[in-house]
Image (cartoon, rainbow, N blue to C red; front, top):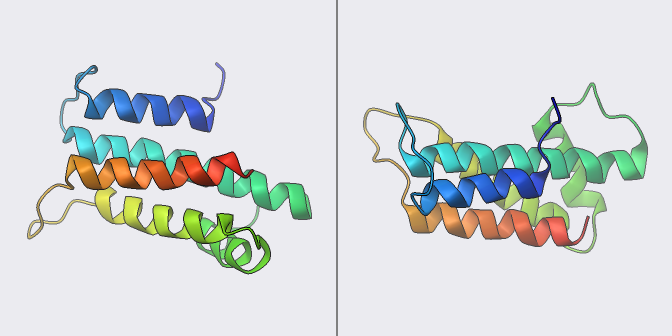
Length: 118
């Protein structure tokens, strides 16, 4: 099976937010955030691998620190903001509401903008 590209993942996330796909168990915004975070992680790894080679042993937080410091066109900052925002949106807490669709759309936009520079 082919691994979905970041664009594929973002398209699926938008379809969930546009109610073009059914979701069971999770809210559509939360599931869209999960897909968008996966797209951000793929872009992050791609950017770091282009610069340093294999980064298979590094976790996403370490890669974000690297990306913010070395990607001087602002891509690292975009990915950091998107990843942390999407991570918050993905996690379910008893005392918090599900993320708003508008919030997730804004974070998807950050991932897209970062992808334009990678």
